[in-house]
Length: 87
Image: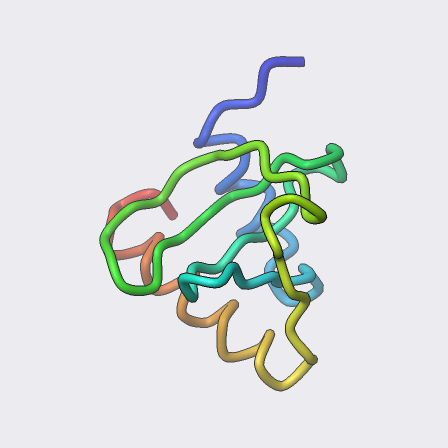
């Protein structure tokens, strides 16, 4: 199955309140897509980018956020998706 950005955004919007959120060393947020191994919807925190990326967590130094920080991150991601007219 070839997953497009639109599909990943729809999946996030439908499940945003339960999505695990990861952060990379640059501070960008990454949420898993469809439970696919290593495929993430990435939203840059200090930039304007929103993209799909294959990010092996062990190589990309992704850190899972705690629940309180995840709530804040999910709200930020949703807001950015709305600003970009993707959600």
